[in-house]
Figure 1 (spheres, rainbow, N blue to C red):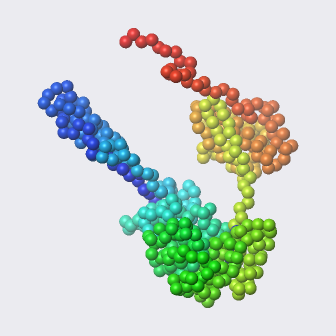
Figure 2: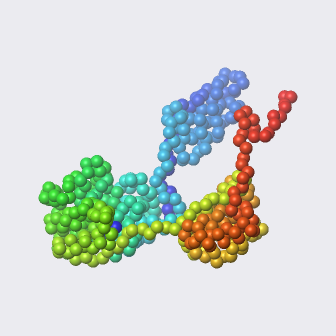
Length: 459
Protein backbone atom coordinates (compact mmCIF):
# COMPACT_ATOMS: atom_id res chain seq x y z
CA UNK A 1 0.00 0.00 0.00
CA UNK A 2 1.48 3.31 -0.98
CA UNK A 3 0.85 6.52 0.81
CA UNK A 4 1.15 9.92 1.50
CA UNK A 5 23.63 3.46 -25.82
CA UNK A 6 24.04 6.80 -27.26
CA UNK A 7 21.48 9.44 -27.17
CA UNK A 8 20.78 12.48 -29.24
CA UNK A 9 18.73 15.51 -28.43
CA UNK A 10 15.22 15.06 -29.77
CA UNK A 11 13.19 17.39 -31.90
CA UNK A 12 14.97 19.80 -34.20
CA UNK A 13 13.81 23.34 -34.07
CA UNK A 14 12.30 23.12 -37.52
CA UNK A 15 11.55 25.77 -40.11
CA UNK A 16 13.03 26.63 -43.47
CA UNK A 17 13.33 29.59 -45.79
CA UNK A 18 10.51 31.12 -47.74
CA UNK A 19 9.90 31.84 -51.45
CA UNK A 20 10.35 35.59 -51.44
CA UNK A 21 13.74 35.48 -53.06
CA UNK A 22 14.60 39.20 -53.25
CA UNK A 23 15.82 39.87 -56.77
CA UNK A 24 15.07 36.61 -58.49
CA UNK A 25 16.92 35.83 -61.75
CA UNK A 26 17.82 39.34 -62.70
CA UNK A 27 21.54 38.82 -62.07
CA UNK A 28 24.23 40.73 -63.93
CA UNK A 29 26.39 43.65 -62.97
CA UNK A 30 25.07 45.85 -60.21
CA UNK A 31 26.69 48.91 -61.78
CA UNK A 32 25.57 48.44 -65.36
CA UNK A 33 24.81 45.99 -68.15
CA UNK A 34 21.74 44.33 -69.45
CA UNK A 35 20.78 42.02 -66.57
CA UNK A 36 20.78 44.67 -63.91
CA UNK A 37 19.26 44.10 -60.50
CA UNK A 38 19.78 42.96 -56.98
CA UNK A 39 20.02 39.27 -57.69
CA UNK A 40 23.66 38.68 -58.62
CA UNK A 41 26.64 40.18 -60.41
CA UNK A 42 29.66 41.58 -58.73
CA UNK A 43 27.87 42.29 -55.50
CA UNK A 44 28.40 38.74 -54.39
CA UNK A 45 29.92 37.03 -57.42
CA UNK A 46 28.27 33.74 -58.31
CA UNK A 47 26.65 33.52 -54.95
CA UNK A 48 23.54 35.52 -55.63
CA UNK A 49 22.45 38.83 -54.22
CA UNK A 50 20.30 39.79 -51.31
CA UNK A 51 17.53 37.42 -52.06
CA UNK A 52 18.14 35.39 -55.19
CA UNK A 53 18.11 31.66 -55.37
CA UNK A 54 21.61 31.52 -53.93
CA UNK A 55 21.31 34.07 -51.18
CA UNK A 56 23.84 36.69 -50.33
CA UNK A 57 25.94 34.62 -47.96
CA UNK A 58 27.12 31.67 -49.95
CA UNK A 59 25.21 28.78 -51.43
CA UNK A 60 23.31 28.23 -48.24
CA UNK A 61 20.37 30.54 -48.58
CA UNK A 62 19.53 34.20 -48.62
CA UNK A 63 17.32 36.43 -46.59
CA UNK A 64 14.33 34.38 -47.40
CA UNK A 65 15.30 32.37 -50.45
CA UNK A 66 15.17 28.65 -50.93
CA UNK A 67 18.19 28.08 -48.71
CA UNK A 68 16.69 28.68 -45.30
CA UNK A 69 17.87 30.60 -42.32
CA UNK A 70 19.74 33.60 -43.73
CA UNK A 71 22.78 31.76 -44.93
CA UNK A 72 23.70 29.90 -41.77
CA UNK A 73 22.87 26.58 -43.40
CA UNK A 74 21.96 24.80 -40.15
CA UNK A 75 18.70 22.97 -39.39
CA UNK A 76 17.71 25.54 -36.80
CA UNK A 77 14.97 26.99 -38.91
CA UNK A 78 15.05 30.10 -41.02
CA UNK A 79 12.96 33.18 -40.92
CA UNK A 80 10.25 31.01 -42.35
CA UNK A 81 6.99 31.61 -44.26
CA UNK A 82 6.53 32.61 -47.92
CA UNK A 83 7.62 36.19 -47.13
CA UNK A 84 10.76 35.17 -45.27
CA UNK A 85 9.69 36.35 -41.81
CA UNK A 86 7.57 33.58 -40.34
CA UNK A 87 8.10 31.63 -37.09
CA UNK A 88 11.29 29.67 -36.59
CA UNK A 89 9.74 26.58 -35.03
CA UNK A 90 9.90 25.54 -31.39
CA UNK A 91 12.54 23.69 -29.47
CA UNK A 92 11.71 20.05 -29.02
CA UNK A 93 11.29 18.09 -25.83
CA UNK A 94 14.53 16.15 -26.02
CA UNK A 95 16.66 15.41 -22.98
CA UNK A 96 20.12 16.91 -23.12
CA UNK A 97 23.18 14.77 -22.59
CA UNK A 98 24.17 13.20 -25.92
CA UNK A 99 26.67 10.40 -25.53
CA UNK A 100 26.78 10.75 -21.76
CA UNK A 101 23.19 9.47 -21.30
CA UNK A 102 22.61 5.74 -20.80
CA UNK A 103 19.30 3.86 -20.50
CA UNK A 104 19.18 1.07 -17.92
CA UNK A 105 16.24 -1.16 -16.91
CA UNK A 106 14.79 -0.49 -13.46
CA UNK A 107 13.97 -3.27 -11.03
CA UNK A 108 10.30 -2.59 -11.85
CA UNK A 109 9.57 -4.31 -15.15
CA UNK A 110 8.71 -1.83 -17.89
CA UNK A 111 10.37 1.10 -16.10
CA UNK A 112 13.82 2.45 -17.02
CA UNK A 113 16.48 4.76 -15.61
CA UNK A 114 17.91 7.55 -17.74
CA UNK A 115 21.46 8.01 -16.48
CA UNK A 116 23.19 11.23 -17.42
CA UNK A 117 23.87 14.59 -15.85
CA UNK A 118 20.63 14.10 -13.91
CA UNK A 119 19.17 10.60 -13.40
CA UNK A 120 15.47 10.16 -14.06
CA UNK A 121 12.76 7.52 -14.34
CA UNK A 122 11.38 6.80 -17.82
CA UNK A 123 8.98 4.54 -19.69
CA UNK A 124 9.19 3.33 -23.30
CA UNK A 125 6.94 5.54 -25.40
CA UNK A 126 4.10 3.67 -27.15
CA UNK A 127 3.38 6.64 -29.43
CA UNK A 128 6.70 7.74 -30.96
CA UNK A 129 7.07 11.49 -31.25
CA UNK A 130 4.21 12.36 -28.91
CA UNK A 131 4.44 13.84 -25.43
CA UNK A 132 1.42 13.99 -23.11
CA UNK A 133 2.21 16.79 -20.66
CA UNK A 134 5.34 18.39 -22.08
CA UNK A 135 7.69 15.80 -20.58
CA UNK A 136 11.22 15.29 -21.89
CA UNK A 137 11.84 12.50 -24.38
CA UNK A 138 14.96 10.47 -25.09
CA UNK A 139 15.63 8.79 -28.45
CA UNK A 140 17.98 5.77 -28.43
CA UNK A 141 19.51 3.77 -31.28
CA UNK A 142 19.14 0.07 -30.51
CA UNK A 143 22.13 -0.84 -32.71
CA UNK A 144 20.11 -2.22 -35.63
CA UNK A 145 19.14 1.15 -37.05
CA UNK A 146 15.86 1.36 -35.18
CA UNK A 147 15.09 4.18 -32.78
CA UNK A 148 13.51 3.64 -29.36
CA UNK A 149 11.97 6.59 -27.56
CA UNK A 150 11.59 6.96 -23.80
CA UNK A 151 9.49 9.46 -21.86
CA UNK A 152 10.87 10.91 -18.64
CA UNK A 153 8.57 10.27 -15.68
CA UNK A 154 8.40 13.09 -13.13
CA UNK A 155 7.86 11.71 -9.57
CA UNK A 156 6.68 15.14 -8.42
CA UNK A 157 3.68 14.86 -10.72
CA UNK A 158 2.85 11.19 -10.22
CA UNK A 159 2.08 9.32 -6.99
CA UNK A 160 2.97 6.00 -8.63
CA UNK A 161 6.41 7.25 -9.68
CA UNK A 162 6.90 8.79 -6.23
CA UNK A 163 6.15 5.45 -4.57
CA UNK A 164 8.82 3.83 -6.76
CA UNK A 165 11.33 6.48 -5.73
CA UNK A 166 10.31 5.98 -2.08
CA UNK A 167 11.23 2.29 -2.30
CA UNK A 168 7.91 0.44 -2.62
CA UNK A 169 8.83 -3.21 -3.14
CA UNK A 170 6.19 -4.01 -5.76
CA UNK A 171 3.73 -1.70 -7.52
CA UNK A 172 2.06 -4.66 -9.30
CA UNK A 173 2.08 -2.86 -12.68
CA UNK A 174 4.08 -4.63 -15.38
CA UNK A 175 3.79 -5.59 -19.07
CA UNK A 176 0.51 -7.39 -19.76
CA UNK A 177 -1.21 -6.16 -16.58
CA UNK A 178 -4.90 -5.29 -16.61
CA UNK A 179 -5.08 -2.17 -14.46
CA UNK A 180 -8.03 -0.23 -13.06
CA UNK A 181 -6.92 3.33 -12.32
CA UNK A 182 -9.27 5.34 -10.07
CA UNK A 183 -8.77 9.10 -10.18
CA UNK A 184 -7.09 9.27 -13.59
CA UNK A 185 -7.31 13.09 -13.82
CA UNK A 186 -5.96 14.34 -17.18
CA UNK A 187 -4.02 11.14 -17.88
CA UNK A 188 -0.48 12.05 -16.80
CA UNK A 189 0.25 8.88 -14.83
CA UNK A 190 -2.19 6.84 -16.91
CA UNK A 191 -0.07 7.48 -20.01
CA UNK A 192 3.01 6.05 -18.27
CA UNK A 193 0.98 3.06 -17.07
CA UNK A 194 -0.05 2.61 -20.72
CA UNK A 195 3.65 2.50 -21.67
CA UNK A 196 4.39 -0.05 -18.92
CA UNK A 197 1.56 -2.52 -19.58
CA UNK A 198 2.18 -2.33 -23.33
CA UNK A 199 -0.08 -3.59 -26.13
CA UNK A 200 -0.82 -6.83 -24.26
CA UNK A 201 -2.18 -5.00 -21.22
CA UNK A 202 -4.99 -2.53 -20.68
CA UNK A 203 -5.66 0.47 -18.45
CA UNK A 204 -9.20 1.31 -17.41
CA UNK A 205 -9.03 4.98 -16.40
CA UNK A 206 -11.91 6.32 -14.28
CA UNK A 207 -12.25 10.08 -13.76
CA UNK A 208 -15.21 12.00 -12.36
CA UNK A 209 -14.38 15.53 -13.57
CA UNK A 210 -15.65 16.32 -17.07
CA UNK A 211 -12.93 18.94 -17.58
CA UNK A 212 -10.14 16.47 -16.79
CA UNK A 213 -12.07 13.81 -18.68
CA UNK A 214 -11.70 15.77 -21.94
CA UNK A 215 -7.91 15.73 -21.55
CA UNK A 216 -8.05 12.03 -20.70
CA UNK A 217 -10.04 11.32 -23.88
CA UNK A 218 -7.41 13.13 -25.98
CA UNK A 219 -4.71 10.92 -24.45
CA UNK A 220 -6.74 7.76 -25.05
CA UNK A 221 -7.30 8.62 -28.74
CA UNK A 222 -3.63 7.91 -29.47
CA UNK A 223 -3.22 4.99 -27.05
CA UNK A 224 -5.38 1.95 -27.88
CA UNK A 225 -4.72 0.25 -24.52
CA UNK A 226 -6.44 3.01 -22.50
CA UNK A 227 -10.21 2.83 -21.87
CA UNK A 228 -11.35 6.26 -20.57
CA UNK A 229 -14.39 6.27 -18.30
CA UNK A 230 -15.83 9.61 -17.16
CA UNK A 231 -17.89 8.48 -14.20
CA UNK A 232 -18.04 8.56 -10.39
CA UNK A 233 -15.87 5.79 -8.89
CA UNK A 234 -18.38 5.55 -6.00
CA UNK A 235 -20.84 3.86 -8.38
CA UNK A 236 -18.97 1.04 -10.13
CA UNK A 237 -22.25 -0.50 -11.36
CA UNK A 238 -22.56 2.40 -13.83
CA UNK A 239 -19.50 1.26 -15.78
CA UNK A 240 -19.56 -2.46 -15.03
CA UNK A 241 -20.31 -3.26 -18.71
CA UNK A 242 -17.00 -1.62 -19.77
CA UNK A 243 -14.56 -3.32 -17.42
CA UNK A 244 -13.55 -6.96 -17.13
CA UNK A 245 -11.67 -8.55 -14.27
CA UNK A 246 -8.42 -6.74 -13.49
CA UNK A 247 -5.11 -7.72 -11.91
CA UNK A 248 -4.45 -4.46 -10.03
CA UNK A 249 -6.37 -1.45 -8.78
CA UNK A 250 -4.55 1.84 -8.27
CA UNK A 251 -6.44 4.52 -6.39
CA UNK A 252 -5.63 8.23 -6.27
CA UNK A 253 -9.04 9.78 -5.64
CA UNK A 254 -8.13 11.86 -2.54
CA UNK A 255 -11.60 11.51 -0.95
CA UNK A 256 -12.54 10.93 2.71
CA UNK A 257 -14.22 7.62 1.80
CA UNK A 258 -11.34 6.39 -0.37
CA UNK A 259 -11.11 3.00 1.38
CA UNK A 260 -14.81 2.38 0.70
CA UNK A 261 -14.42 3.37 -2.97
CA UNK A 262 -11.53 0.94 -3.42
CA UNK A 263 -13.44 -1.85 -1.69
CA UNK A 264 -16.53 -1.36 -3.90
CA UNK A 265 -14.48 -1.51 -7.09
CA UNK A 266 -12.45 -4.46 -5.81
CA UNK A 267 -15.61 -6.49 -5.08
CA UNK A 268 -16.78 -5.86 -8.65
CA UNK A 269 -13.61 -6.07 -10.75
CA UNK A 270 -10.57 -7.37 -8.83
CA UNK A 271 -9.77 -11.01 -9.51
CA UNK A 272 -8.79 -13.46 -6.79
CA UNK A 273 -5.20 -12.90 -5.81
CA UNK A 274 -5.22 -9.39 -7.24
CA UNK A 275 -3.67 -6.34 -5.62
CA UNK A 276 -4.69 -2.81 -4.72
CA UNK A 277 -2.30 0.13 -4.42
CA UNK A 278 -3.70 3.17 -2.64
CA UNK A 279 -2.30 6.66 -2.34
CA UNK A 280 -3.56 8.23 0.88
CA UNK A 281 -3.42 11.98 1.39
CA UNK A 282 -3.96 12.54 5.10
CA UNK A 283 -5.30 16.10 4.80
CA UNK A 284 -8.08 14.98 2.44
CA UNK A 285 -9.34 12.44 4.99
CA UNK A 286 -8.92 14.30 8.28
CA UNK A 287 -6.96 17.54 8.39
CA UNK A 288 -7.13 17.74 12.21
CA UNK A 289 -5.62 14.32 13.00
CA UNK A 290 -1.99 13.26 12.87
CA UNK A 291 -1.03 11.65 9.54
CA UNK A 292 0.04 8.42 11.25
CA UNK A 293 -3.38 8.09 12.87
CA UNK A 294 -5.11 8.68 9.53
CA UNK A 295 -3.00 6.02 7.81
CA UNK A 296 -3.71 3.50 10.58
CA UNK A 297 -7.44 4.19 10.32
CA UNK A 298 -7.47 3.61 6.56
CA UNK A 299 -5.56 0.35 6.98
CA UNK A 300 -8.14 -0.86 9.51
CA UNK A 301 -10.98 -0.03 7.11
CA UNK A 302 -9.30 -2.07 4.36
CA UNK A 303 -8.78 -4.98 6.75
CA UNK A 304 -12.52 -4.97 7.44
CA UNK A 305 -13.05 -5.36 3.67
CA UNK A 306 -10.87 -8.52 3.67
CA UNK A 307 -7.72 -6.82 2.37
CA UNK A 308 -4.34 -7.95 3.68
CA UNK A 309 -1.82 -5.08 3.96
CA UNK A 310 1.54 -6.00 2.43
CA UNK A 311 3.68 -2.88 2.76
CA UNK A 312 3.51 0.83 3.37
CA UNK A 313 5.87 3.68 2.47
CA UNK A 314 5.81 7.30 3.54
CA UNK A 315 6.21 9.77 0.68
CA UNK A 316 6.32 12.84 2.88
CA UNK A 317 9.44 14.87 2.12
CA UNK A 318 11.64 16.14 4.88
CA UNK A 319 12.40 19.87 4.61
CA UNK A 320 15.79 20.61 3.04
CA UNK A 321 18.14 22.74 5.10
CA UNK A 322 19.44 25.23 2.55
CA UNK A 323 20.32 28.90 2.17
CA UNK A 324 21.25 31.01 -0.83
CA UNK A 325 23.58 34.02 -0.82
CA UNK A 326 25.43 36.16 -3.35
CA UNK A 327 28.77 37.89 -3.67
CA UNK A 328 29.63 40.81 -5.93
CA UNK A 329 32.82 42.47 -7.12
CA UNK A 330 32.64 45.16 -9.81
CA UNK A 331 30.54 43.51 -12.54
CA UNK A 332 31.07 39.91 -11.37
CA UNK A 333 28.25 38.22 -9.47
CA UNK A 334 28.43 34.85 -7.69
CA UNK A 335 25.39 33.02 -6.32
CA UNK A 336 26.02 30.33 -3.67
CA UNK A 337 23.59 27.57 -2.72
CA UNK A 338 24.48 26.01 0.65
CA UNK A 339 22.78 22.92 2.09
CA UNK A 340 23.48 20.13 4.55
CA UNK A 341 26.10 17.79 3.11
CA UNK A 342 29.61 16.42 3.49
CA UNK A 343 31.98 19.28 2.68
CA UNK A 344 31.62 19.47 -1.11
CA UNK A 345 32.40 22.90 -2.60
CA UNK A 346 32.19 23.56 -6.36
CA UNK A 347 32.46 26.67 -8.51
CA UNK A 348 30.69 26.42 -11.87
CA UNK A 349 30.79 22.65 -11.46
CA UNK A 350 34.55 22.47 -10.64
CA UNK A 351 36.02 21.61 -7.23
CA UNK A 352 38.14 24.28 -5.57
CA UNK A 353 41.31 22.21 -6.05
CA UNK A 354 40.94 22.50 -9.86
CA UNK A 355 40.61 26.28 -10.02
CA UNK A 356 43.47 27.85 -12.01
CA UNK A 357 45.78 29.74 -11.69
CA UNK A 358 47.10 28.69 -8.32
CA UNK A 359 47.52 32.23 -6.95
CA UNK A 360 43.82 32.91 -7.48
CA UNK A 361 42.94 29.51 -6.02
CA UNK A 362 44.71 30.47 -2.79
CA UNK A 363 42.76 33.72 -2.67
CA UNK A 364 39.54 31.78 -3.19
CA UNK A 365 40.34 29.43 -0.30
CA UNK A 366 40.79 32.24 2.24
CA UNK A 367 37.37 31.69 3.93
CA UNK A 368 38.33 28.05 4.61
CA UNK A 369 41.75 29.01 5.93
CA UNK A 370 40.40 31.76 8.19
CA UNK A 371 37.77 29.73 10.07
CA UNK A 372 39.11 26.21 9.42
CA UNK A 373 38.00 23.51 7.00
CA UNK A 374 36.14 21.69 9.75
CA UNK A 375 33.48 24.40 9.68
CA UNK A 376 32.65 23.36 6.10
CA UNK A 377 32.54 19.60 6.76
CA UNK A 378 28.77 19.42 7.22
CA UNK A 379 27.66 21.54 4.27
CA UNK A 380 27.73 21.35 0.47
CA UNK A 381 28.15 24.66 -1.35
CA UNK A 382 27.65 25.09 -5.10
CA UNK A 383 28.48 28.46 -6.63
CA UNK A 384 27.69 29.90 -10.07
CA UNK A 385 29.63 32.99 -11.10
CA UNK A 386 29.34 35.16 -14.19
CA UNK A 387 30.39 38.58 -15.42
CA UNK A 388 33.60 40.52 -14.82
CA UNK A 389 37.16 39.30 -15.20
CA UNK A 390 39.03 36.46 -13.53
CA UNK A 391 40.09 38.45 -10.48
CA UNK A 392 36.68 40.02 -9.96
CA UNK A 393 35.06 36.60 -10.17
CA UNK A 394 37.42 35.17 -7.55
CA UNK A 395 36.58 38.01 -5.15
CA UNK A 396 32.85 37.54 -5.77
CA UNK A 397 33.09 33.79 -5.15
CA UNK A 398 35.05 34.12 -1.89
CA UNK A 399 32.47 36.60 -0.62
CA UNK A 400 29.53 34.34 -1.56
CA UNK A 401 31.32 31.41 0.12
CA UNK A 402 31.80 33.27 3.41
CA UNK A 403 28.30 34.71 3.43
CA UNK A 404 26.77 31.27 2.72
CA UNK A 405 28.49 29.70 5.71
CA UNK A 406 27.44 32.54 8.04
CA UNK A 407 23.84 32.40 6.79
CA UNK A 408 23.66 28.61 7.21
CA UNK A 409 24.98 28.75 10.79
CA UNK A 410 22.57 31.58 11.58
CA UNK A 411 19.55 29.62 10.33
CA UNK A 412 20.31 26.01 11.25
CA UNK A 413 23.08 25.88 13.89
CA UNK A 414 23.12 28.56 16.59
CA UNK A 415 23.56 32.28 16.99
CA UNK A 416 26.80 32.02 18.98
CA UNK A 417 28.58 30.02 16.26
CA UNK A 418 27.33 32.43 13.63
CA UNK A 419 28.69 35.40 15.61
CA UNK A 420 32.09 33.73 15.99
CA UNK A 421 32.30 33.13 12.23
CA UNK A 422 31.26 36.69 11.46
CA UNK A 423 33.85 38.17 13.84
CA UNK A 424 36.62 36.03 12.34
CA UNK A 425 35.76 37.10 8.79
CA UNK A 426 35.52 40.77 9.75
CA UNK A 427 38.85 40.66 11.58
CA UNK A 428 40.60 39.24 8.51
CA UNK A 429 38.91 41.12 5.67
CA UNK A 430 35.66 43.04 5.79
CA UNK A 431 35.09 42.49 2.06
CA UNK A 432 34.40 38.80 2.78
CA UNK A 433 30.96 39.80 4.05
CA UNK A 434 30.34 43.30 2.68
CA UNK A 435 29.33 43.68 -0.96
CA UNK A 436 31.36 45.90 -3.29
CA UNK A 437 29.57 49.30 -3.21
CA UNK A 438 30.78 50.30 -6.69
CA UNK A 439 28.14 50.25 -9.37
CA UNK A 440 28.28 50.86 -13.11
CA UNK A 441 27.16 54.38 -13.90
CA UNK A 442 24.17 54.53 -16.20
CA UNK A 443 24.91 55.34 -19.82
CA UNK A 444 23.64 58.71 -21.03
CA UNK A 445 21.45 58.93 -24.10
CA UNK A 446 23.34 59.52 -27.34
CA UNK A 447 26.81 58.82 -25.98
CA UNK A 448 29.06 55.76 -26.21
CA UNK A 449 29.46 55.46 -22.44
CA UNK A 450 28.67 57.06 -19.11
CA UNK A 451 31.75 59.33 -19.08
CA UNK A 452 33.08 58.94 -22.61
CA UNK A 453 33.62 62.20 -24.52
CA UNK A 454 32.65 62.80 -28.12
CA UNK A 455 35.55 62.52 -30.57
CA UNK A 456 35.69 65.24 -33.18
CA UNK A 457 36.07 63.99 -36.72
CA UNK A 458 37.14 66.11 -39.73
CA UNK A 459 35.98 63.56 -42.27
